[in-house]
Each structure stands twice: as structure tokens, then as C-alpha cells.
Image (cartoon, rainbow, N blue to C red; front, side):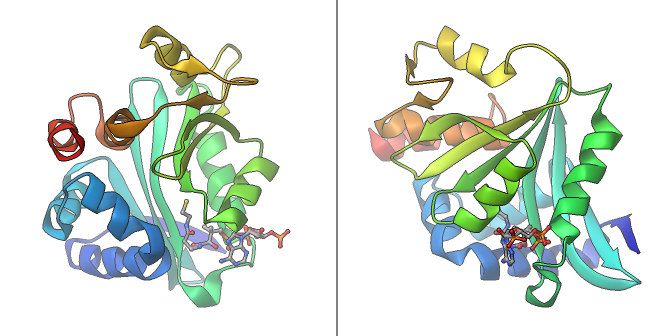
Amino acid sequence: MLTYEPARVEQYDEFLQLMRNHTANYLERTMELMQMTWQQFVHLLRTVGQVYGIYEDDQLAGFYWIEEREKVLHLHGLVLTGQFQGEGIGTQVLKMLESMYRGSMDAIELGVHKCNEKARVLYERLGYETVKRLDDLGFYIMQKRLSPGPSPNAKDCIRSGAKRNSGHNLVNSGYKASLRLAQIAFGKNSRYAPNVIRHCG
Ligand SMILES: CC(C)(COP(=O)(O)OP(=O)(O)OC[C@H]1O[C@@H](n2cnc3c(N)ncnc32)[C@H](O)[C@@H]1OP(=O)(O)O)[C@@H](O)C(=O)NCCC(=O)NCCS
């Protein structure tokens, strides 16, 4: 049986390491683009949103990191240890979040790197749609609506002047893509956003 417990202070380093191990091929590069150090990333993990340990019969299977931002639940991370992958746990966690937030949130949102094809297929199977493609960074922003109506982020992007592609896929380019990712991941007032502009400009 799966249970979830708020992360304890001493677990943050372990969770960060787990995330590093399983996303190393793109996380390092993305942080470089955001000019973010691991220390800053740990600080975000400790201070933004909530982190929960995922337990399968009392054994730690991984963690998820969420943040309620206005009416969108942002899933910053969902990472399972190798031995617990491919057993349906990720699916259960995503379904649990859906049922927990249906009624209070309009959508669940997450970012997935294009090299993480397996995860993207899983999200699509669960009804997540790509609402933005940050081609320069190789990231897809996906959402699953929890209430009827247009995608909150699609509307937001159209207002900010991004080009519309087919369907509601949206493509940004250059530093704007890095800026968008920083804003999507850590909020519109993210202190990392200006760094991205300096870095890319
Ligand atoms: C992505 C992840 C959370 C999915 O959870 P999961 O419990 O392994 O996935 P489930 O068992 O519920 O679903 C399995 C499906 O997910 C996909 N999948 C994604 N990553 C997988 C992995 N590492 N191993 C096995 N299946 C994986 C497969 O397509 C599989 O589909 P199938 O059953 O048709 O073969 C988990 O594999 C993981 O932690 N991976 C490493 C970190 C990561 O990539 N996190 C997501 C960042 S966006």
C-alpha cells in the first residue's frame, strides 16, 4: 500500500541526490541555463511548495514535490528509486494528486524533458497535454485540466505574444524560452528569471 509523508529535514539531501541521479542528463544543463547552483536548488526544494516522501509498505520508494500556484498545481518533481520504477507507483501518485486537487485547482502542470520519452508517454496516457514546447531547452510543459475550460497557460502565453503552433502547442525561442522555463518552474517573480536574461542576452 502506498502512503505519503511530508519530507523530513534530513531527507532533502537524499531526495535531491535521487533527482540528480535520475535526471542528470538534462537537469544539470537546465540549471546552468538558469544560472542556478545546487545550493540554490536545495533552497528551493526546502522553501517552495511541499515535498512528500512516497512509501510502499513503509519502504521509501521516492518523493514528489508540488506547489499550489493560484489555480494550478505545479508538479516540480516526481522521482522514484530504480527498484520502484515501472510498477505503477508513478501512475498511482498522479491519480492521487488529481483526485485530491479536483475541485480546488483548475489544472496540474509539469515540465518534462524531450529525452524523457517514457515519462512523457506516461503523462500522455494519463491525459496530460502539451501546452508549450520550449524547443531551445528541450522541455515540454504539460497540463491536465481538472475543471472544464481553456488551459490557463495557453491563455497566458497568447497574451504574452508567443506564436501559436498547431493545436495549442506554443513555441518560444532563445532566451525567452529559458525565461519562460524559470517562470513556469519557480513563478513569475522568480529571482532566477533576470539571471536567465543576463545569461542569454
Ligand atoms: C517517471 C516515473 C515517475 C514513472 O513512474 P513509474 O511508477 O515508473 O511509472 P508506472 O509504473 O506508473 O508506469 C509505467 C509506464 O511509465 C513509463 N515509464 C516512465 N519511466 C519509466 C521507468 N524509468 N521505468 C519503467 N517505466 C517507465 C513507461 O512508459 C511505462 O509504460 P508501460 O507500462 O506501458 O511500459 C518513474 O519511472 C521515475 O521516477 N523515473 C525517473 C525520474 C523521472 O524521470 N521523473 C519524471 C521527471 S518529469
